[in-house]
Amino acid sequence: MELKSTDGVHIIGIGGAGMSALATILHQRGYRVTGSDLKASVVIEKLVALGIEVSIGHDVENIRSADLVAYSSAVRETNPELKGARESRKKVMDRADLLAELCRGLKVVTISGTHGKTTTTSMMSLALLGAGLDPTFVVGGELNEVGSGARAGSSEFMVVEADESDGTHLRIPCYLAILTNVEPDHLDYYGSLENLELAFSRYVAGSELPAVVCADDGGAMRVAMGSPFFSYGFSPKADFRIDELELFEDGSRFSLFRAEQRLVQLRLAIPGRHNVLNASGVLAAASLLGVSLESVAVALSRFTGVARRFQPKGSFNSAPFYDDYAHLPSEISVTLQSARQVGGGRRVVAVFQPHRYSRTKELAYQLGKALAGSDFAIVTDVYSAGETAIPGISGLAVAEAAKEFLGDDRVLYQPSRSELANSVAKIVRPNDLVVTLGAGDITALYWEIKEHQSAKE
Image (cartoon, rainbow, N blue to C red; front, side):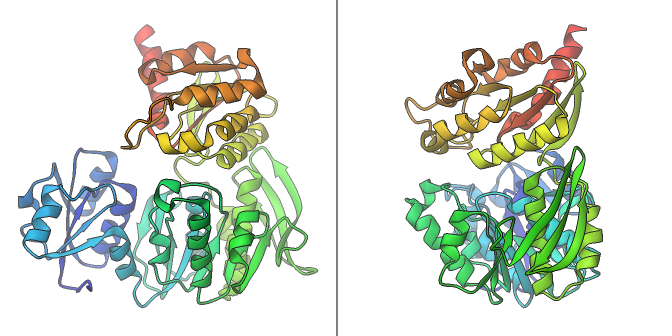
């Protein structure tokens, strides 16, 4: 099934990060795009401002003029628009198929891995933009420099954040694959760690050019074996090796070497050793593409991050607040390391919302251990993300694990999400540094605390 230039495309669930990005590219390429979602949002406001017609609520009437109907993995077969499209024999595509169609005929650089995808994809997109290559890109977050997570470029290059959660990373034609890391996740989809690793092995093997793989991640190196690849990282054995690292409160400086040759030196304006690693992967990929590393270094020096990736939110009680999407143990660890780097001796308070019952069941102890990177941890209950609750599984298991490392007096479990703002406000001291962590609605906590403060005044 192919997407024709004359097709009118309707997108069910257009307000989601993944589908809104595809809607933006389709619109910029000249397609007639409509969409629907259950509720209004800032994302939908931006789409409407572009000229895309969006309906709030799902109704079969919304698809009448569409030639093709696309839907996200969150949309069920009982959805009236999806059901109507099938019954009327319209062309129907899921997100992965539509994305693959948009990639057709282009040299696609894909970025996948358990975490680090969004930041690395954003850096790669900015790198090619800075080199004057005008790429199309699809990112799972908004680039601060561009103000969007998607853009239709005019060159032969496309950069795509390749989601592994539902196998999308295996359905996209790949010119050059970047693999950031491989850890247990999405086992509800894959069934086992073995199947997850097999999928990533297929991802690396599917790269037309030798893939770019993180040398510092054992999982990534393990799945890459048997396929041609180049490695990057701090490891002395890395093909593209990081050295001469300096960490500052507001960023870092490092050099990238290949064997004994210094390829480039770079100053990053965002903190964290993990961001140095992400940038080195982008530099390695740019080198294989034949792009000037000096121009890439200039572009990356201007990179100020992605929404919900250690994003400054403001301050409360003279304590700066940051927000991060981190919801896996290693993500939490590196985010809290960044908080230490930025904090300069401040007490670091982590506020964590576990994401999905299935993930909490598998990783509760590791999540609690990761929170030991803070000085005080506050844990709330699980954000279900549409999952059915699992009896006996809650945020309490994470809090209890954190207590093993921090002690009872440095961990608070607040199961009530509605009471969380009040609890955090009572804990925060002047000059603390607070980080909200999680992939759910924890991102709204800072504003809830500010509203709580205003109501008291």
